[in-house]
Length: 235
Image (cartoon, rainbow, N blue to C red; front, top):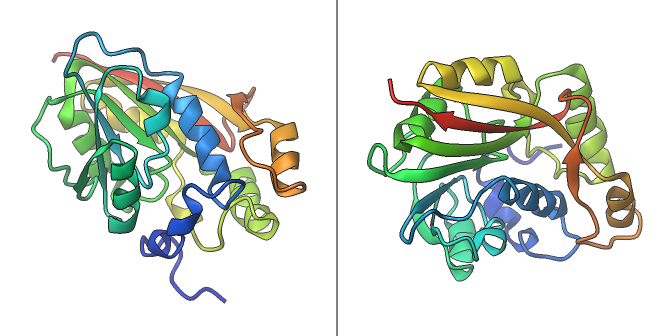
C-alpha cells in the first residue's frame, strides 16, 4: 500500500539518498541525464544560461560542467536542491509552472523526466517556452502515454525496481503528438525520437546491482521513452 498518493513530490525528499547512490533507485536517471547532455552543444560565449527545469539532485551537472554554461536549476524539492548545489548548480526553489526567471533569459532549457510529473502540461510548456531565448534550444525526455509504457514503467517497473513505487502517475504520461502541439503554440518546433536503456546495462543494474554500466540509446519506437529537441523561433 502506498503511504502517499502517486506522483506526490514529497517522495523525492524521502528518496534523497538515492540521487547519488551507486546502483541506487535513481540509476536509470543517471543514464537519461547523460543522454540529454549529449544533445547540448557547448556554450557559444561565456555567461550563457542553461536552465535545468526540475533539476532534482543535479544529475545533469557533471555532464555539462565543461560546456561553459551558467547552470541554473529549478526544483520544488529543497533536499534535492541542496545536493544539486554541491554539484555547482545555481539553485532556485520554484515551480516549473511558474518559473522564477525572466522571459527570454535562457539559451538552453532542459526538461528531463519532469513533464510526466506535472499536473498542468500546457502551463509548464508555456513557461519553458517563455524563458527560452529566440533561437534557443530545448532538450527534453519523458514517458509516452501508451499501454506499453504503463506496463513497463509502472506495473513491471515498480515490481522489478526500475522505478520506485508510486513515483509515477500514469494518467500524467505525455503523448508525443500532444507535446509537439503544445510547444508549437509557443513558437517552439520540437523533433521527437524514441529511446531505450541498453539491455546489458539493465541486467547489470537490476540483477547484479552494478551501476554506471548502462546507456540510453535510440529506439525504433517512442512507445515508452522518448527524447525531444526543439528551437524557439521569432514570431
